[in-house]
Length: 252
Image (cartoon, rainbow, N blue to C red; front, side, top):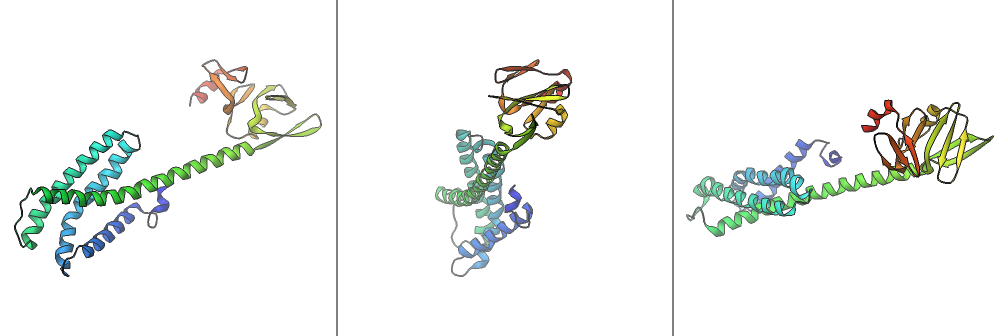
């Protein structure tokens, strides 16, 4: 479902476009006194570390800890990720940038510079994580709406049953189970029964997927199952046997 949010439906292209825009934007923003060469060079040097932090967050920490509500493990892992990425950014800055562009020498493990690196990494990780969490929320909302729609549709399914020279309109959700006896079947509901001269196979063909055949003579509405075991299924106050040839299908 996430494909709807990708550029041309491609995850790889979407990520490439995002990081390209990120690089161009922040290289422009952080340029001092019009020194774009130094700014873009620094962003190029630090980009792999930002990407490491972002992808570890969205593909490991969020699904493994946050989505499973393992909050303590998530917070500790997040803190560890920021510390590692902050130290890496400080090392990359010192060895690959300051030697070319810095006017004053700095200590490699200067605490204030390390904290600054952690904050900068965290800003990128938080920004992308917010997008990821928002997309997951939208996806969950889409799934929920689809589930609600399917339930509403199921509730509105109406079956027309011909019996006693009349046609009865019955909501399929009201049917508990159907019993076949020779050339006719009995539709059993909470407060009534309707006998129709059709086969059990014909009855099943007109029913939605909530109905399962569990015996050569019985079809049950799984939404009304109260309990079950290897031998039978309880629907309301009725105990319906499970045919031996249907047990493997029911188990699946």
